[in-house]
Length: 469
Figure 1 (cartoon, rainbow, N blue to C red):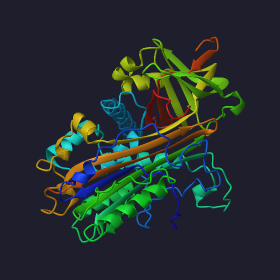
Figure 2 (figure 1 turned 45 degrees about the vertical axis):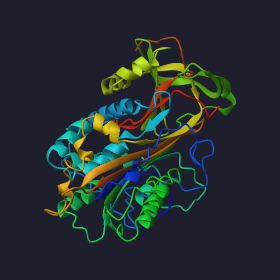
Figure 3 (figure 1 turned 60 degrees about the vertical axis):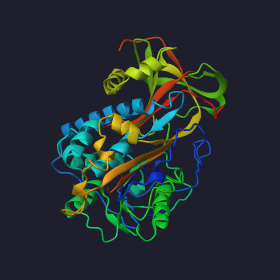
Figure 4 (figure 1 turned 180 degrees about the horizontal axis):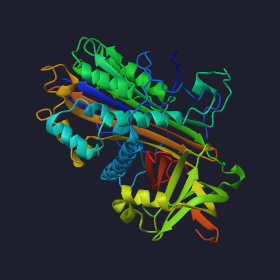
């Protein structure tokens, strides 16, 4: 199968090194600035948006993940439930040092990338990762592969799903969801056959040889180029300077890209300037979109939630508006069960939704949040156990040095574009009711989720409109 070139989205990267890389510790903070060349309002309509499904490009190689014959839906639903729980766990941890900032992340990407790392973990490191990442399902890697396959199929909505390409460069594909994994390993390093087989068969990631010893900066550029390609140019430098050196042994990358039009677009002539009250109490004039129609809607103890479906109906954005003045208290207690209750309570009602037009990105390091969630050993060069990645006796001293996560989102009248990238470095050493009005003119939470599986693809908060008035 020919592997097409061009960007999609890249979501996770993990790097195995033999020594702690101090430069890779450079702190990266969440930002509310406009991402580089990103956004629905300035979306590049002329490009081909859809890539061949099941593409797994690794240095020019493509691998198709096989279908699972024995996996039942109960296992898949257990994985989705636990992954959604991890999504909220991670979101809460990210608040620790950015309480006044917008936050956007793709927990499904982090979970997949760390799942590829978990495949090589052993001992207490494995048990801690299993608990922190909520990997409770049996046959985790097979189930993770099946979830990715089903999510991949959401984007197979045009002729290219059958391998066709009509060559129409002006086609504006209304829905795209793609996930890609890649693995970059030091040439001649004795990676375990079982580990490589798991990555290839369950994650569609065939190992591509890299020359980290001889050309670390060149390999970093090569991986970042792959990431930029997979993210439609949204994430240009996932791995910062110093994150790769001559002791790097393995980099694992997961990518997720999402681009979708609303099922019913917001009329541009109904977008008006309105006041958004930020979390700190300051008022900002922002473009507020508006649309009246029948929406999936629910209200629970003063918290209101509405779901905005995308074209095709398989994906939707859930917007959660806590009671006025109670956003922080609600967010602190928000968990996977509450998210599930809101989704289960959705009922179609006539109403008007007014939502800001916004875009921002987030860059974070995940080591501290993951340690707080209960997996410190993975980041400890004395206690980490990733011996399953290498042939017997060759993997001593590998440890997870850092996990980087970059994500960006843009929402406008037409729809949503979202992308994320995660990089981790491992080193050696009801009845009719009156129409409702839902006005998101104050801080709110939002989740982009896959409806058929229930998987949360992206989770974020909007608390500060600075930069998109």
